[in-house]
Image (cartoon, rainbow, N blue to C red; front, side, top):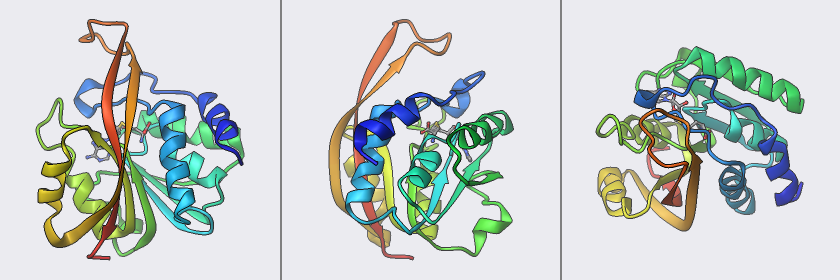
Length: 205
Ligand code: SAH
C-alpha cells in the first residue's frame, strides 16, 4: 500500500464522538498517522510483526498497522466510547484488531505477560494532567522492542532523561500536528503543534 492510499483509508475513519479534554482525546490526523506508520514500515517494524497501540482512541494507528500487514494488532484504550468507534472503524476497513478496554498504567490481563515487536502511540502530551505521558512511556518500554511515539517538539531531552537507560532513541522526525477546533476551550479554528515522531529501542524488552 502506498502512503497516499493509507492516508485516504485513514481519512475515512470516524473520530471521537465526544472528545474529552482531560484524556487529551485528539484523533491523530491521517497524514501524520500515515507518516508514523510508514516510518515504522520502512524499518521493517510492521509487516508480519506483533503491534501494540497504547491509548488507541478511535483506532487510527491500530487499523493502519493492520492495513500495512502487521500480523497481530492489539489496541488498549481507557474510554469504552472511543473503543466502540475503533471497532466500527476496523470493521469498515475489514481489518482485525484485538481491542481491550484498560488503563496503560495497569494493563489488562491479556497484555501483561506479552512482549510486542512494535508499540505505536500518540500519548497525551500532559497539557491537562502533568506527566500523563509517563505511564505510556513505561508501558511501551516494558512491552515493546521498538516504540514509535509522537511527542511535543522540544520535549525530547525530558523524554530521554525520563527513559534513562531503559531505551535509546534511534530516530526523530520533525512533523506538525494540525488539529481542527474540537473542544470548547479552544479559541482558534485550528492549531498547529510542532511535534516529533520518535523511534525508541527498548533495552528492557
Ligand atoms: N491513538 C489515537 C488517540 C490519541 S489521543 C490516535 O492517535 O488518534 C490519546 C488517547 O489515549 C485517548 O483516546 C485517551 O482516551 C487515551 N488515554 C489517555 N489516558 C489513558 C490511559 N491512562 N490508559 C489508556 N488510554 C488512555
